[in-house]
Image 1 (tube, helix red, strand yellow):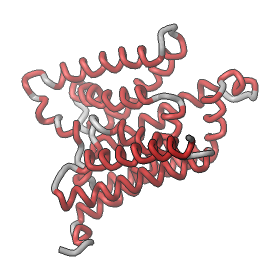
Image 2 (cartoon, helix red, strand yellow):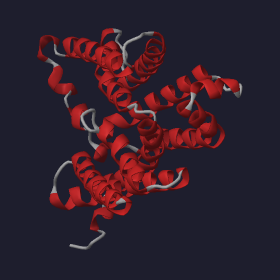
Image 3 (cartoon, helix red, strand yellow):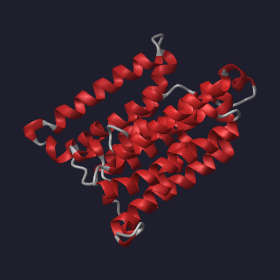
Length: 270
C-alpha cells in the first residue's frame, strides 16, 4: 500500500482540504480563547449545537445548519451580555446556561426515542464533507483572517485591560461581541465534521501547547497554527490507516504535543 494511497479517494481529498482550512482557524481563534480563559465559553457553544438542532426541528427548518448557526450567535451574544452584568463568576454563568441549553436540546431531540439519528454529531465525521461545505469553511477562514488583520490589536487590548481599551476609544462591547459571533460561526460550521464532544479540545490544545513555549505573540500564533495543522493532518492520515475516528485521533496527537511542550517549557525555565 502506497504512503499516499489515501489521496486516491475523493472523500479523503475533501477531508484533507477541510483539515487544511479548519486547523488554521482553530489555531488562530484558540490563542485568544486561551488568553481570555474562555474554554468554558467555547465548550458551551459546542454543546449548544444540540439546542440549535432542536430549535430547527420545532420550527420545521429543513437545514439544521441554519438553526444551529442562528441559535449559536444568539446564545453567544446572550452569554456575553449576562457575563458582563452579573456578579457571579463568568464560568458559573456559562456553566448554568450551557447546562440549561443542553437539557432543552436533549429533551426535544429525545422525544419519541428519535435521538439516535442526531447522535452522529457528537463525534463528527470529517469524511462526509462535501465540496460546497468546503467553500463555506473557506469563506469563514477568509473572514477570520481579515478580522485578525484589522481587529486583533483592539481585541488584544480589550483582553488585557478593558479600562485601558476604553480610554483608547475602543468599543469593548463591540469587539467582544464580534469575537463571540466569529467563534460561534466557526464552531457551528465545523461541528458536523469535528463533533460536539471534542471540538473544544481542538480549539484549546494547540493554543495551550503554543503558550507553553512561546516568548511573544508572534511565536504564540505561529506555534498554535503549526501544532493545529500538524496534529490535524497527521491525525487524518493515521486514522485512515488504523481505521479509527479522525477527530479523537487528532485530539490524542494534540494532547501529546501539549504534554511535550509543557515539559519543554518547564525544563527550559528552570
